[in-house]
Length: 354
Image 1 (cartoon, rainbow, N blue to C red):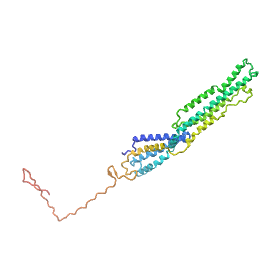
Image 2: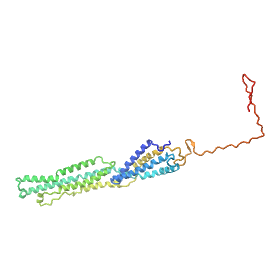
Image 3: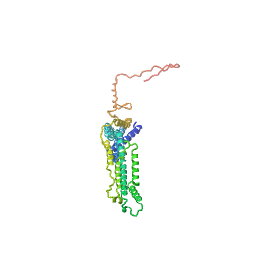
Image 4: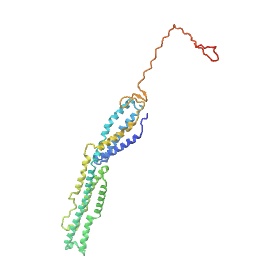
């Protein structure tokens, strides 16, 4: 009863509540800052420290005996902490409420995310069409230039030369570099499509990474198509490198950018957030509610205690002394004789007492 801090099973639930509060606060702060995990971590740490201090300190003050702090000051501080803890708790609910607001749009976010990354796959189809058209045009040029000796100098078979040069251009445009890039991008998109959810805070990192990857893929495809063979230059045509003229990447990035509206929107608290917050608040108060007040304390959270351990703590009135009685000196004090004691065997003697 008179322990300064009583550890009980309630602290287990309290620590569990703090862990859940930290998790949801980190998720909400991450969405709020668009994936800035460093800032989200700082916000979460501040909330956790504030809640622990504001809800555990009243329990310590309730169990104090006045050894470290006077009881009168102790009860004042205890009342300040208890009556202000709901305000502190409500102020710390911002990230948690924001997460539940984002989570309420989980289906829309997942659908938009999948549409955005799947739209990027059209980039490789567009490049393959560009490469095939360029190879076909080069083959037709060689076919029509069969009479040009400068193209086939030192080659006995013109058909073999045309095939070699056509294959050389195809390897440059659709060679191992392109094949490897296409396979890696397809694998990445497939992994990103596996059960995306707002519960996974790294979804924000995936979105940012896919945007950067899409632009990098387009730049690499432009590099693959930039070299022009000398034979192509002889054709007298202006060979242009690959260009995303359909705006596939811009369209995919634009779809993913729509997700920002879900992360940034401020909405009223959802019922799930309110219910979860009430449960967390009750768990945080458990240690204080189960802590017994020290027997030396004469205070309650409101007012003073009337009795303490079955004993009244009100000061008792001093016992009244009776006034001495006057003695009459005129009264004779004479010895009184006791009645004689009778015995079954001897009745001759009596006893007198002064």
